[in-house]
Amino acid sequence: MRKTVIILSVFVFLNIVKVLGQESALYRNDGKLLIDTTLSIDTKILDELVDFEKYILPNFYSRLSYPRFCSQNSVYGTVIIKIQILSDIAIFIEPIRYPHIALFDAVKQALDINILKSELKTWEIFKKYPVEFYIPVKFEVLEDTFRQDLKEQNAVLIKSSSGTGYYEKIGIIRDTK
Image (tube, rainbow, N blue to C red):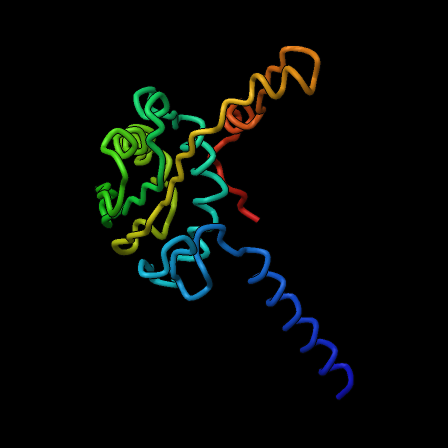
């Protein structure tokens, strides 16, 4: 009896760890989009979406750029797009919300349909039945801190991020473990 309880406890613990370890960065466990809970997805695709976030969104991020016009004119805000993938890997990108068409165009260009098709062709869930989900992208115009940085650093400060270069090197091959 004691052995059964221990084994059952370990089994329950491992399943909880598995569920907690695969939490989406974009969606709640009930399928609602974190940034806009009026939008939701079918919860049976959450596990695959976690993989999508892990393997495909970094490549999308590396291709995404802030439109020059929007940056120069302080156009910012959140773009939410809906991606529909039909069983034959026909992919449609639909704008749900965007503050300026140039920001939506930047997102759509970074989510090149041909690239998405090649990246998704090995994912079984997208072959079984039509799938739809949302991707939010926040655009922010940063404050120019040149004068403040010059005063505080006593030098011209150049900032960089290894993010984009790092993500360009990430493969889209998923772990099969």
